[in-house]
Structure formats: structure tokens, C-alpha cells
Length: 362
Image (tube, helix red, strand yellow):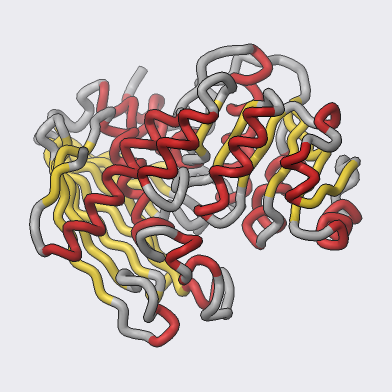
């Protein structure tokens, strides 16, 4: 197969073995991401359906149920923790503020349910460790949707096959106008350290180039440096309205990453090797079309993946992958131990920004 023919397999599901079946999901947390991205992606999936929604009030759940025909029950958080309607779902998708992942993961594990938890895994590395320990007897997947993105998976394979030689450097960026795109409320949870964790930008956005680089290179971070600043009043409680950080990986590759919650909607991931480079752009933030470019030997091969709803496509892939593994009883990745490496790296990045020193990931 030529490189061009190989790159053109970008949309193929290389992981799917399930042919039929349905995984019934309880969706915990009904914020904008769940309502506008996750639930529509579940509806579009082959192997999942939302049968239970969990929120602060029955009224909020009922509003979502009214527009989602598969939903059978709307629960409050307390009812979910107490085990109401456990026979109405097989697995749990957790999309609450970061610092509330732990209690609902603990409850899901107590009910014997598989867990798909949004990233970052928790607000701090210590709480993330508690979550992984609590879920040791049930399948736990962390929702790094880029790992089931077809373009990212092709990047990983091309790097492993030596298409660009030995990886040397990674350049990654993710930026958005959070107060315009997510919520204009300066009192939202993403700007509250008690709920968000170490910060607002690297926790929410910088984790994308960090984790996607790990996945593409099949490597882990060793040490980091970082700089951050917050200029606007809305970001007064968090250190990182804007951030830049570097990573040394255990294979010797270096990464330079930037992230901002007050910047133009933009994202890219570039892997530079000794013999060529790979570029996926735009990425991370649902812009489309997404193009994978391979440059080598003075040639350039480019593929527009043809998708026009990248968020929906990426999340549909993620949910179907989760169902494929859970319904077949197969090991699942990225799991909790994988996510703990990111949590330790995030803690090190914020420490590096505060101290102005290089910090080991430990």
C-alpha cells in the first residue's frame, strides 16, 4: 500500500469488533457540553443510548428527557448515589465539574457499572488517585476523544511505522474565547479553583496537546517547564488565562505547547521527525474540515477527512469504542492509570509556572 492509499484509510474504524448490541448509559451532569455534544453523539452512535439522565433537579432532567426519546428516567444526584433505577442503565458517563467526578465515580463503582469519565480525571492528582482506586473493580475509561479520532490514530500509526523518521519535536496549541463559546458567566465553575482544580486553561485545554502527543508518540512525560498569566478580571482566581509549557518525554522528544481561554478558536498538532513531519489542523476544538498532512522527501500528501461535525463525529467514535469494549468484556484504554500520568503532569506544569523551575513529573 502506498503512503497516499494508507492516509486515505483515515475514516476507518480500526478498533471495532462489535457487530450488534446496545450499551444503556446514565449521563451524569447536564451542562452545555453534555446537552449540546455528548447526548447528540450518543444518539448518533451505533451501540449506545441514553436511558437515564442525572442532574441537580428533576426539572432539568425532564427538560433533557423531553428532547431525547430514549431517556426513561431523570434522577437527582442524590438519587443516583443512593442507587435508584440501577436496572435502567449499564454504564455511566460522568460530565460534572472536575472536583465532582470522584463521588459519582464512587457511586457508579458501588453499583457495579462501567464508567466513562470526562477529563481531566479530577481536580487534583490526589483525588484522581482516589477515583482510580474506587473504580478498580469496574471498567474505567477516561474520555480522551482524540484517541478515537481517525486522523490522530493514523498519525500514531505513521509515527510507529517510521514515516517521519525518529520523532524530534511536537508543537501543539488549543485556544478559544471561553466566555463567548462556553459561558459568559465569570462565576462559572471553570473559573472556580475549588471545582476546576489547578487552573482554567491547562486543565481544560492544554491537556489536549499533552495527552494527544503522548498517544501519538506512545511515550510519557518526564519533566516540564511552564509560564502563565491572567489579565482579565474574570480570571482573577486562576493563574492561567494564557499558558505555555514544554514537556520532555521519556523517548527524548520535546514538546512545546500553548493554550488560551482568551484567543481565537484555533488548534493544531504537529509532529516533527528526522525525515519528515505530520500536521493535523485544525484539531481539538471541533473546527472542520480537519486535514492530515504528511511531508516527507520533498513531497506533501494532504487529506481532508470530509467531516463537517467534528465534535459529533469524535464523540460518537468515543462512545461506540467504549461500548465495543464494555459489551465484549475487553480491556479498555485510555484507562485510569493512563489518566493519572496526565494528572501528575498537570500538577507539575502548574508547579513549574509558580516556581519558574523545571519540575519532574512524579
